[in-house]
Image (cartoon, rainbow, N blue to C red):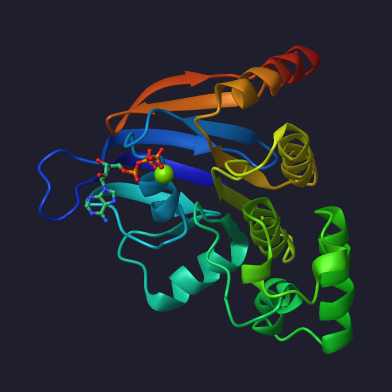
Amino acid sequence: MIQLFHVTKIYQDSDAPALSDVSLSVEKSEFVFLTGPSGAGKTTLLRLLYGADVCTRGQILMAGRNLQNASRDVVTQVRRDVGVVFQDFKLIATRTVFDNVGLALEVRGLRRVEVETRVKAVLNEVGLIHRAHAMPRRLSGGEQQRVALARALVSNPRILICDEPTGNLDHALSLEVMGILEKAAMRGAAVVCATHDEGLLRQHKHRVLALDRGRLVSDRRGAFDRAADLVSG
Ligand SMILES: Nc1ncnc2c1ncn2[C@@H]1O[C@H](COP(=O)(O)OP(=O)(O)OP(=O)(O)O)[C@@H](O)[C@H]1O
Ligand SMILES: [Mg+2]
């Protein structure tokens, strides 16, 4: 579902690459953590995946579509396949929680009743239905983070990209959010979750990709993946 071939990203006015010769692939229904110290290149990599930026060298395929030299149309198509939870949420300040989540469906031309049903279902899932008519600035950091998650999930994306989605949450809410992301993977989404929370990595035995100064320094298969390998022989 996600394929990177020798991807290098060098920002303008910077000599050290933010990503250096990174190759990897993530399959449908796979849950992958992306980790590494601050400045390692996690956000840079995620931004390339949803076409917010382009790589300097290499190729990126998202659900079979090549993002290198892609037209606006192709980037738009890719974005429709990808749900994103940004490190800083990026909620629209002038819209309610409900509208923030529903917008992705409205631009797809869904009917009002269908938008309403799906937004309510996903707000229920993240435990925020009682805040549906609140404005984002009236919410706590953790609540805003869950609105961002609801917005990413509402369109049932084939690929889910999350940048520190538990960064502002206490332990109990982190577990809940992880459960929601894992459910999305079980329903078939490829999920990439950037985190430097060691506790999270220890508790949830998924595949872990580790970046260090832009290089992919390890790719550790998760315990569940190995169990699945044993079952499938
Ligand atoms: N827009 C930009 N212009 C120039 N350099 C950038 C830009 N964005 C990031 N960088 C640099 O690229 C490197 C990787 O940054 P990135 O934000 O991807 O790290 P990160 O792993 O997400 O860190 P954190 O854990 O703090 O979120 C850093 O050295 C950073 O300074
Ligand atoms: Mg980051």
